[in-house]
Amino acid sequence: CVSKGQRVLELRAGLALPCLAAASLGVDVTCTDLSSCLPVTELSFGANGYSMSAEASMWHAPSGARLQVAALDWLRPDYAALRPPYDVILGADITIYDRLHTALLQVLLHLTAPGSVVLF
Image (cartoon, rainbow, N blue to C red; front, side, top):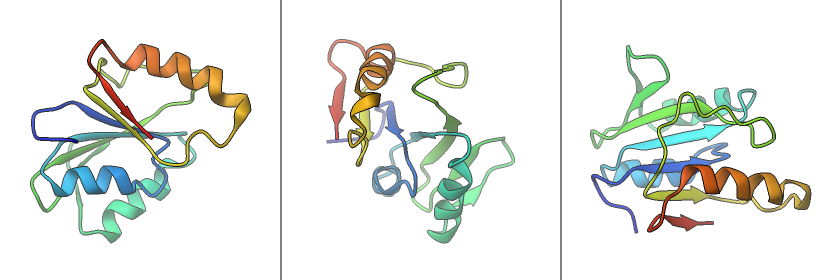
């Protein structure tokens, strides 16, 4: 469902399994989460053999893919580090909090365009 050349973003990455899976296919991915959670995402990258780039918030996968790490709080979104729209939005366990559904919808509307694919 993802391929090289597509613009891919994961919401609430945490350990970033969807990011890691996409990057293993050579796909560049932007991995987002709350700023307080991004250290866990970066630890996961390091534990999986990814190397930090000299460029801030950028990692390199063994496949050659690039992973960008960016903070995104759905309740107070700041899209400055992102460049929507994205072709594919990935998410795992991101709909468990009913109170965040409206905010999630607003974020998705901002990050996508007609033809974008959203996979949870």
